[in-house]
Image (cartoon, rainbow, N blue to C red; front, top):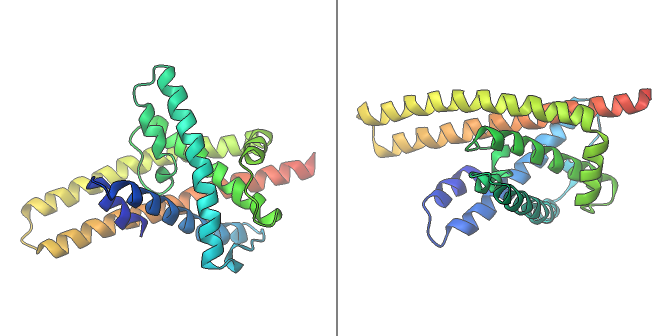
Length: 222
């Protein structure tokens, strides 16, 4: 869904904004499913799988508008500081699954993903209540391990970007030379977008979950 909506959004027009919102909610829904499996694989417990689709949608929307405020504030602050590509910071949530436009943006998406994970984990403890500032505070308290995870994820995102670009070039060459039908070409391109989105999402959640786990372990030792 997110991949399809992203393609529609790139087409521009009146449908672009609704498509972006639907794409971001779809990314968050996929993030929930991935986070549940990653948390359980790391030895933790998660009740995300017990949520209905309606509950997941409401939780996604609650997270979305809060993260949107963070991205707007960051973009405005960066623009005021003279950063010419500040508008790309608005793609922080999108960058959890799809390639960002700049290297700083790739680290920014990693930080946004960490905030989303913390908001989800806290919501599980607080009967579904989303607390942005509490999540930011927890991020600061767990900055050693989560910060390291964000940096590691940013580096991985950069490596993924180069790999994705290489595949994109290969697909472009295929488009120019192949006699395959447009349907086959479009299907291959869609599978390319979807595959890298899922790969990036899995890597994102896995690295951040491990960082959060190490933070909890460190707390237990102190």
